Length: 283
Ligand SMILES: Nc1ncnc2c1ncn2[C@@H]1O[C@H](COP(=O)(O)OP(=O)(O)OP(=O)(O)O)[C@@H](O)[C@H]1O
Image (cartoon, rainbow, N blue to C red; front, side, top):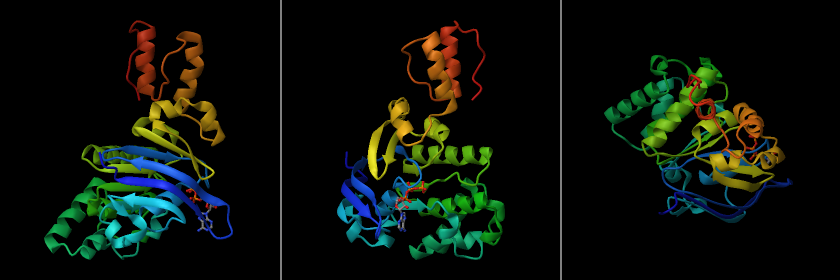
């Protein structure tokens, strides 16, 4: 299968700085749902900015949908890769939510009724349809984040990259955003999301890439990566509380069983251990 994103030997340093990325080699295939994690300053944002053409490799090469990202116009890449910035205020410029979400579609030259349809659908998906005529900067940070997400959804790109998509959201909104991300992935979008929230990683990601000081130190299935507690400790990332609890209990109850990632898995596991005497699920 042809990769959608192919990164070979990518290194990058900001002026007068330590290398932000060092010899990154990564391949993202169609249909993946990938979490990119690492402590502050690990290089996550720098890496994804190379995938949308905002930064050009100093060494190495980034290919997106078969095209060299360094030689492709940003506007052209934007048809393939949607990017939701960590700070929504970096991508919100218009005076109503509706105009903001329509902007990229107008640049594509789409007919007016198609634009209206896509804007309405995207606002519905993020739960903001009732705020279409509001000035975006009057909204909460979480709502502005969802405006930015709606703008990307409306573009219907094959790849969606989200930099900390749940920042500023309460716990219900966090889950709603991640359920939407999972639905988009099921509909065929390839998703890469950056987060520090390892509970969301455990629950939603199928693959995890760990960056530490500009290098990839782990890349594998969520279960494999989250079971490497010592490696995660290097990056100051802690597995979800339920995983830590299960690790402690496993030693006592059922040595050698698989790492547990969610409350549902824990309940299922306890059912097995106790012959079905525990009610669930409760995640
Ligand atoms: N515009 C910039 N100019 C100079 N140095 C920068 C710039 N942006 C990032 N850096 C530095 O590059 C390194 C990687 O930063 P980057 O923002 O990619 O990390 P990150 O993993 O996304 O961090 P965070 O989780 O805090 O967003 C850090 O040392 C950071 O200080």
